[in-house]
Image 1 (cartoon, rainbow, N blue to C red):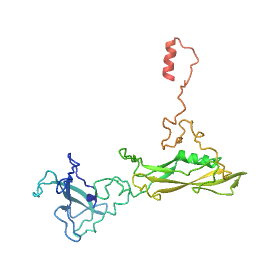
Image 2: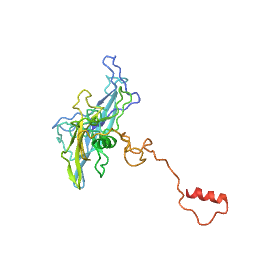
Image 3: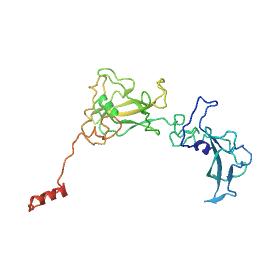
Image 4: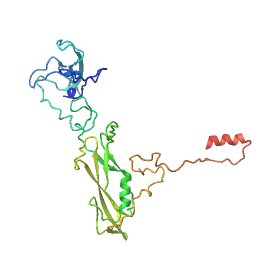
Length: 311
């Protein structure tokens, strides 16, 4: 099963496809040994018997003979016009008739794992990508936010998608497939809170300060494998943040300026899921002289040498 799922043909002339031919020329035909449950092993499978005992476990080395035929250039009437390749794998306690039913289920469902789980010679395509994306908030501040909009600003700047298939990018697509589309709640100044934001009311008094816990519902959509016409084909993640004295309409203008301009501060200030890149590095470098000697230098060149060594 593992060989069927993971062995693929290679050829310097691949990919070959001639749809106008009759029958069409697809490229390479791979033939694996045929196993019939309950029958002895075929001649194309040879296992060492008796098995070798390793740490109390009986292990055989089984060699599988697989053939590949060039459908474009080989003679289809000559059964010997093929290339034969042998693969050796370790198998537990091999015995004649020890043949479970053929299945790939043990390999499926692992998401993007670098394995061609469905045996179509394409690794980690959408049919194999069964692990949905999620969202991660990189840090939560110790202090409550002054307003709901401040909390939302912080989420926009610091929530990023995570997926076992990232990064995915197909620049040739129209529109290009970038990977994950994240949708945050929409706040309109002066309007009531939307349904995607729920805050505890009345707020809880803590040390004389009124604090509400606001839950923000954020969605992420896998742009590569989801159905863009199905609004429910998304993953929903909720984030809870503390906000001071929440009241309907307590919405200053949307801004991220309070977070910007801090240079390399470990925060994704511009919300592009890259922390402290050049666009966020707004604090210029400087120079420091580690020490200044007590005695004057004999010459200017001595002073310059000291600077070169200590700045």
